[in-house]
Image 1 (cartoon, rainbow, N blue to C red):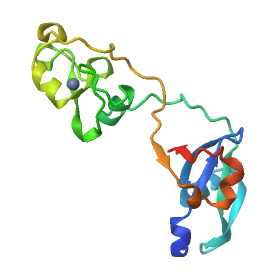
Image 2: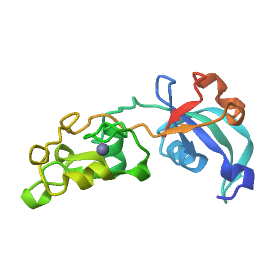
Image 3: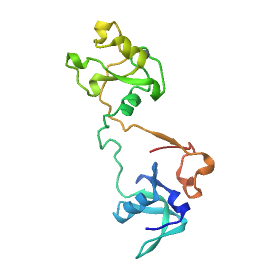
Image 4: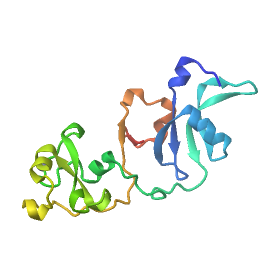
Amino acid sequence: MEASATATATRTLLLSQGFEPIKVISWQRAITLLFLGKVEVIEEYDHDVRSVSLVIKIPAVVRLLRAFRRHAKPVKFSRVNIYARDHYRCQYCGRRASISELTYDHVTPRSQGGRTEWTNIVTACYECNRKKGGRTPREAGMALLAQPVQPNWVPAVTIRISMRSIPDAWRDYLYWTGDLSE
Ligand SMILES: [Zn+2]
């Protein structure tokens, strides 16, 4: 499909079946969902997209036709999701830090059979990570803020949209926070 430069940058607001904003998706994704029969178009932009066989208006707001299950998938085991679970806080000294200042730590070190999994990995600052070394918290005399668990939420990576950049077509469907989860 071809579209103008403006259209290429256009994003579509995805609503749940209950009209709650879920996330912002690309218009291409919105059209794919539409063709798959997963969404209905609630609002359209003025510009079209053209393919060989059809011309359609770019969807501005689409709504899922089926219930959206937030907990359908297990949370992906990744560095960023570990930080999110631990609220970007070193689990030893409690200091909050940015991603670049954080690392992850094997609670039971690998050298002692500790596995790389949710329940054995915590967020740590570099200093605590170094101090702890290849020891257990007990051996190192460093207490954990909380026992690491496998999370069951969908980590919300918040994207911020300034009020000015919110398309008019979305306004009725946002709750004026300006924040959406992507
Ligand atoms: Zn620390």
